[in-house]
Amino acid sequence: NGGDYMEQVEHHYVDNNGVKIHYASAGEGPLVLFIHGWPDFWYSWHDQMEGLQDKFRVVAMDCRGYNESDKPEGMESYAMPLILSDVAAVIKDTGNEKAIVVGHDWGGAIAWQFTFNMPEMVDKLVIMNLPHPKPFSRELANNPQQAANSSYARNFQKPDSHEAFTAEGLAGMVSRGDADMKAKYQAAFEKSSFDAMMNYYRMNYPKEPYMEMPDEMVPPVNVPVLQFHGLNDTALLHGGLNRTWEYINADYTLVTIPGVGHWAQQEAADLVTSTM
Image (cartoon, rainbow, N blue to C red; front, side, top):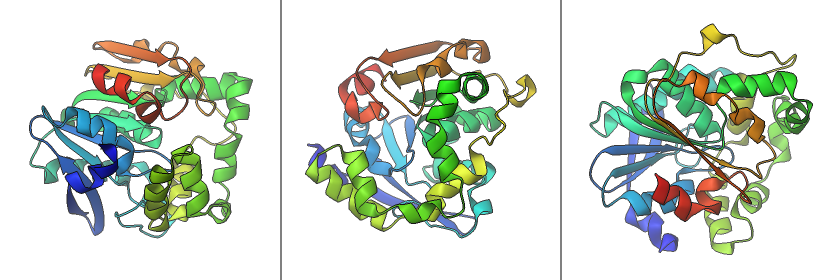
């Protein structure tokens, strides 16, 4: 059962240029690498890991700044190229050249960018509740509701935004009333850096005035893509899904999930795992 899953995995640490990245690993077979979002940690994926570990090597990383991974100081430490190098370091540390890359929220943004920048390391791409950057930039620039609903991200970009958080408050937000999950998340967030979490937004989230990303900034994706989106997500509106297919030169499967919000891998765990 999921409650014991923390004890079932092996824990590994890889040094990426002086930054230690933690990941949990189970199973044997082709590598599936899971990347969490904000505010989260590797355990976000325990349902999928458990469901896939009989056929795949399932690996979930703690992104820099979170849980057991290092929390380097300074905003520049959270620039996207450095985060992408963490992903590459984990893949190589498992003894693989490439992975099926799975990302949610910020992990989804990282997974898209990893596919744009290191396509040779991506076998397939699975995205959870994070529109492709190009349609998302279009929505921010042209859809007043998306711009309004991104006000939280503008607040997160402010220099003192991290002071608003507590481990308990963040854990309550993610665990949705499950006391066992809340305890696990609170322990992870007590080890995390809220300043680092906010640096993802300060360094990488689009800033005003919002502009649609130029085409030349978006390399086409040439690997199969499976994208899930809980339609009740209020942070990332489903308008950002439209025309994603124009930027993918391979099989593209979009699974929209009515009645489910931002954490599709947990709120619709069985659907996500079986579809994967």
